[in-house]
Image 1 (cartoon, rainbow, N blue to C red):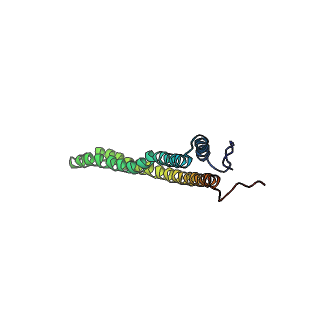
Image 2 (cartoon, one colour):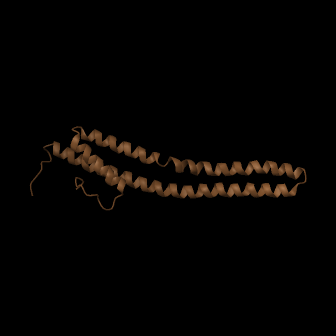
Image 3 (cartoon, rainbow, N blue to C red):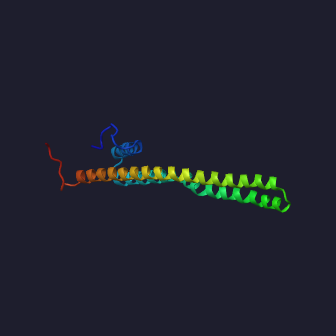
Length: 151
């Protein structure tokens, strides 16, 4: 089932690549279970690391929007003290615009982060299932309790 050279339908390219790599390891390596488990852990780590940029963007964008709000507010309040209403309105427009942009970027980033996280969780689940199935096939082939029977 998993030993075919054709990609499996219904799973992503990442899962198919993982199955292909797992089969290559099993064909070459006599200590296949440990190598396959290592492959699964490496792949999982890489997938979660690929989420770092989005995770950082979700956290940093609203913070930068707040910083972009506070800086012009300071100069705007100083302008208010001097009676310069034109400068105050310009600074308030900049302050509120940076807040909106920071929140918008954070919201959109969170949306994409949530969707990608779901995809990665599903891929990891499928890779773990493929690893378990392969591990059971290795164990059955190595032990006489489950002998191969001809049909």
